[in-house]
Image 1 (cartoon, rainbow, N blue to C red):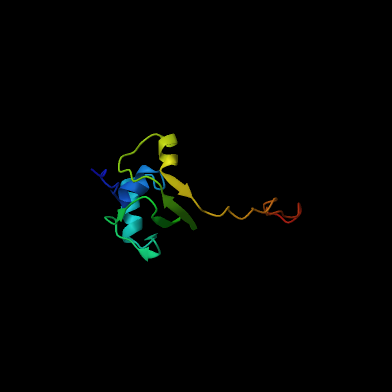
Image 2 (cartoon, rainbow, N blue to C red):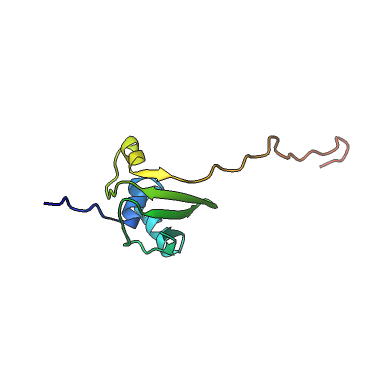
Length: 109
């Protein structure tokens, strides 16, 4: 007898592995075209299985993820980290000093 295949809805999986804070936010991202599965646009009910590549646009960055285990319930952070492989490149370094506005002391307000 073969074991049942692990399958989960995309929006539930994104919420369970903590990519989005709420399931509603994950659903809206899918409906808005911000999430792709294996290179094609995905709906919230798109099934995800181990080995599937998910690309999500989150806070003006692209997050590249690979599913290692399909879960559909929120679990502890350490368990959630085992269900995904993050292939996202590191963020570009920020400028060391932030630009601050300075004015001459005699310039008034």
